[in-house]
Length: 59
Length: 222
Image 1: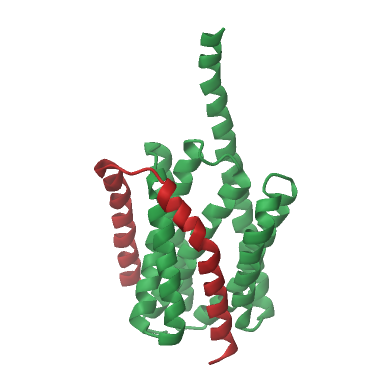
Image 2: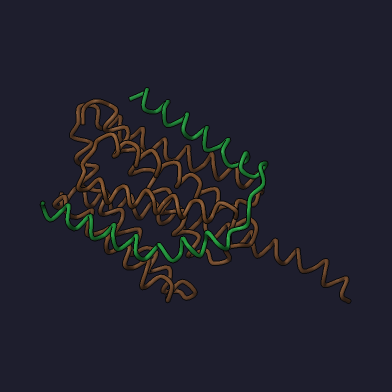
């Protein structure tokens, strides 16, 4: 196990510990989205996914 | 009197929102340029590969400990440039690594251009539709935590397919954060342009780094 791996694990572990309470709070406080809201989110995200595939095919 | 206030208040609110949006995009442009400059410096001085880890750790500590205390004062701007400068400097060894590949310049340019197109496209979509994406907050945060946990596990497991999946997932989650953060700017959910800038900067940074990793692996020369 090298220092780079140990350091990366430490930074990621610290991020998880710090962000966990925030995520829990966000999950309980976020308003619920309607089907229309989720569609308005999923369409651009699907376009991003398609765009990334296109970039992969280009290189 | 009350009626006059009721009419005047939304106008003030719209003006304040427009000011936050303008300040956010101005500061974001400046931090991206500063970050690119620091990446250039880092590429020239060729620091060891450990640099990225140290700069990410340093930037995380600044975001966690310093930014909440300085975000409402002028020193918040210094903190923002400190964070973005550190993250930019950390990109140097990675960019040098990819540029040394046979089609490295093409991979880096594609990742840079691709990140720009994704950011401008999603920002344009959120700004023109003016939709409220505040419902995404919990979903995106939990998704990000799951990805962090998977990345932590993959440090020890070292599964290439999991690396690819993590990079793809980070791009999707950060794209969601761009919609979420932009919608918060438009709808008055975020009134501090320093915090808004850091949120958008981190999304752009993560999309670029993970798109670069994805393109680097998939180009077949990694």
